[in-house]
Length: 193
Image (cartoon, rainbow, N blue to C red):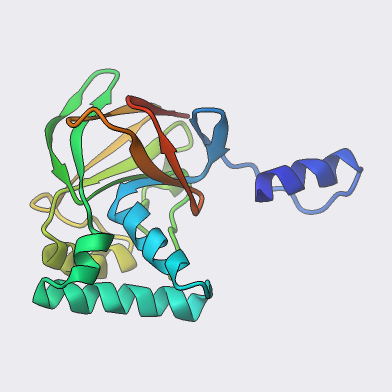
């Protein structure tokens, strides 16, 4: 939506400061941030409150973290995993349950979290995280993400790439997030620079 508004403003001759950013293509849309699993689940829970705001986002994150401590229903909804393969042109990650697979061309994902810390130094790719930690370990790893550090090899894979394909093992549709908008698409789903 923001991208479309910026294009319309440019077409009307309105100018302002410009910043060029690379984007990812998912189907017929483009965006800076992409995610499946807990990334999609968090936003579904957040939007489900009917009151989107920074305070609601922080509250949703806190409720999810507290639920992870006790194995509650909230975290079960929020952290529904993506089960399947993540395939790159020259590599693939093992098929498994991923708490989240997320990618970005900008370093921040919101609330000060910076999972894509390598983006400032790599203009020719996007960064992908394949997180396979249990929900409680995922929450513990968020401290590193907040400080723009890797979650840790025991919790996640990282890769810089220009193309990835998600292929679920169940053969169903893929629920995903693109720049905060919730979407669903038939599989396989390809994300490219």
